[in-house]
Image 1 (cartoon, one colour):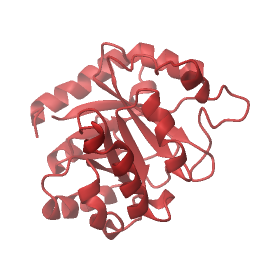
Image 2 (cartoon, rainbow, N blue to C red):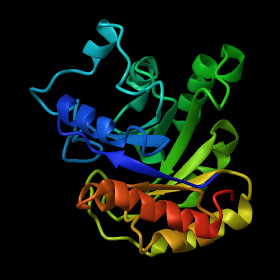
Image 3 (cartoon, helix red, strand yellow):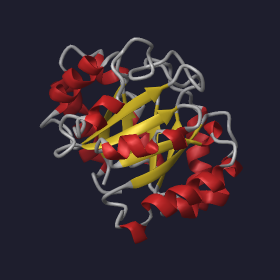
Image 4 (cartoon, rainbow, N blue to C red):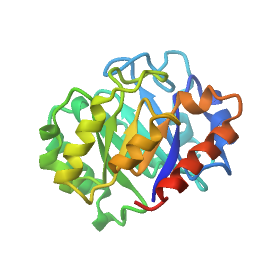
Length: 240
């Protein structure tokens, strides 16, 4: 099923809550971008010094706002993502995206996640999915040996990750074309540079999940912007 996924790059806990509130009832899926200022920058909440730590949610046994009604995906643009996966799962995230370039021993990490959150632990893909993100300059060979251990792949459609509003990098279309010829059944999403202008190209190429940040948040009416995306999805067919 092809869907539009608004991406939130939170400046603070309050900013995150406000944007989740704004999306409630408008979409089914949301991506929260976590940037540590090291692997990518600038830092976003909760990695910004002086902001409330996300572990306080866990300490109070709270879930992220609307975690029960929205499918929340957390895009970990951080060093050593294995150290924070458990916290976000505890907060109600149902999709965790790991950037291949952020991990020294990728197969070891994926095996660890399988042991901790694998199907034998009751975490079927519809309950918790693990995906791999790949930067625009990285080769497919970096992730292809490990595809059997993940549920989806995310290609970055921009040259510099961690910031919203970057221009779309057309090179991602060639990467998608090559990937789709080799791997026809793996769900594919693109994050970065997604707009009403680029969405048709991505859908036609075989992308089923469009992650859009600045296109939505800079719109004067986010509801109408999301409706415009949904119209495009309808014209290409919601099911891919």
